[in-house]
Length: 311
Image 1 (cartoon, rainbow, N blue to C red):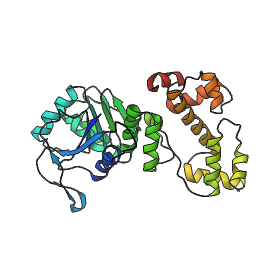
Image 2: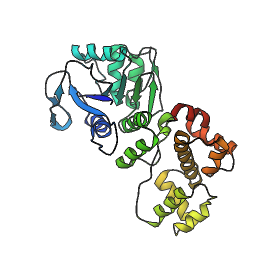
Image 3: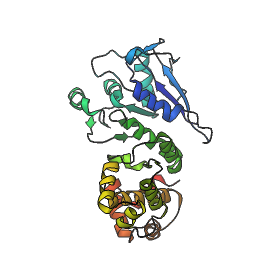
Image 4: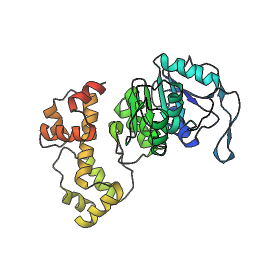
């Protein structure tokens, strides 16, 4: 069982901390070997946060019993790091244990020097400040999150969910990550680097439009035309295209490709189909076409994905 510590501190950001709590501390009795999570502080005091909210968390002066540490934000200015946090976080990273920083949380690791020579990211508002303060760190912009060894950094606020879902998928597999994502009702499409490794479920709205999309997801192995989707949604093609773009910021064809890639990802993790069989199972004309779209969306080949994520 993976023991997780969510670090509350004097300048913790409530949204990012709530994301971490929702992802890792919410009881999920239906899932085996789920995380055992504590929200902790290392300053032995109540935490005053935005809006005058005061939170009380479990005090500890040692992180040794934890396997994963989550840092939901950190001051971007010259804020003195409490000695216990400095000592224990450096020791934790040096032990090779997993650390996840959310939004400005990367500033703590950067100030401690444990990100030197590594790749990291943070909220776009802090990009210039981060690069000026820490030129020895390889800053990566325009991504939702990035991993470098045992350290994962997410960008702005909501990308904390993307990073957390990626970790859940690594630990528990594609199906479990998708169950958690559906419960969160996350965005149907998230652009940005490795974030595409996390399944992006569709909001379930009881109308003909969503019913048409449900039908498409159940028949991805068939030849589906956009006209047939528009018919099932009881819309003209023009209205359907406009509705699709407004809902997903995608064309229907782009959405179909994404759904087929999502299906392929799940099968690559759980089945032993050849790439040619896989292409047929998910509705691509041939393996070459599937490989093209797979690499375009994920920046790796289906074979590389299987090697990395096969369970």
